[in-house]
Image (cartoon, rainbow, N blue to C red; front, side, top):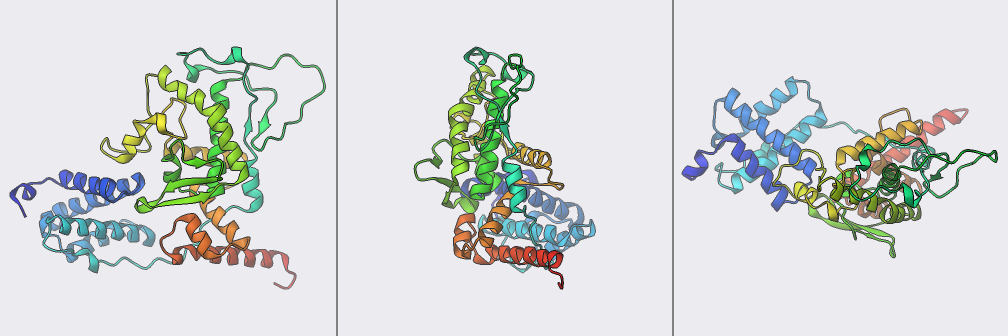
Length: 380
């Protein structure tokens, strides 16, 4: 090890590791953030508990660190993720000459029990996706002038609206007063949320893949979306007709309104999560003009905002449990299997590197069928 490497601080090592994951391995921001945290915790354990430097790391110290994690109450899944992060970290340490050889290959975490992902029923998915009512287009006089503070506009609820799939809402024949002016920002957010929910369920995207989409990522003519998944692997996924319509309305009617907030607000960008300035995710956030989905201040929509809106609309749809973007991904895959799709096609749809990962959805489908039979069959 060089003299310069020997004097590296823990923070410098962790920063270099995170940069490697982001710039060389193309890992998602979420993965970089999680692995950074695990690497920092491991180095702190070496220094404070084992009383050794990073260059002296061995498998005994790794097991000691993992055991300490278990003593704090970490479950099998958490320990498995920690072990995976540690193995990636030690491989990088060895490859960069910071330790003599890779010691992580002998680290094993407790075996995880089979955990079936939670999925929505067809009826729940329909209620969620049909639950967004987009206000009618504002009159020209209602659109804020350039430079106006759209975020501060608070208007009365509109008297009528159009559900996401274009079915007009019922209106009374009785005479009414002129409806209150439509808030163009509120309507733009509704159009965006509709497109986000439809695309998550239609194409089974990960939230990191969705927020990374740029303009041009959707091929309206072919009905496909081009995404980059784990390991920077690219795939092309079909997009359903309702999702394409929601995306078309967002791009033509909603996005220009929020894009205008960039100029009005001085170009404020909303970074996704807690990305560092040097990460690819942060660089994307600095170029909101390329982003497909925008926040109310004109910056790239963040993954936390997507998680919040999914759970909020699920509650409005009467779904009495926590729903995440990954719930929609699991639901899309399960519904494909239940509809007769072969596992290889579902594997390509989800971007899984291994068919074994996709096979979990056959178990989900079987468990759902068993539950239905037990509830409905008189001699179950």
